[in-house]
Length: 123
Image (cartoon, rainbow, N blue to C red; front, side, top):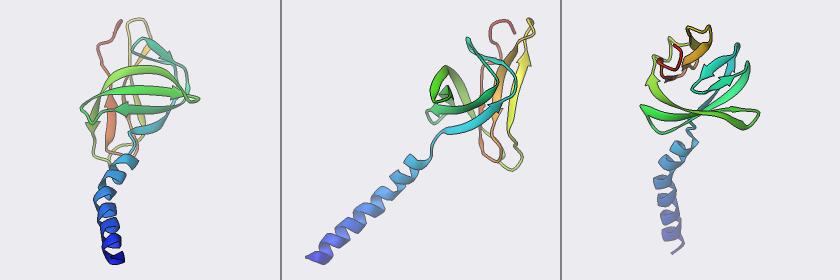
């Protein structure tokens, strides 16, 4: 009887372990933004941000958090890079009004990259 219970418990743990591994895989990274950049309707000031996204891609919703508070939520596209070739990189585009617009975030030694609309207002 005791062996059956242990076997049932062990079986349940084995079946649930892949779900735990997925739950542990968070869709977030920290980024350092050196200069003010525009993302959607929000201007992000220089500083450290936590970037989180929801969804498995390619279309995702991206949140920018600063000091634990959400400062911007924007649509983005999740793309896959060759993880050995990437480095931390904030890609911006200069607008006609000399504002920097965030177009992409590449994460060092990770396969994930986030791409934002290149055709934002004023570009």
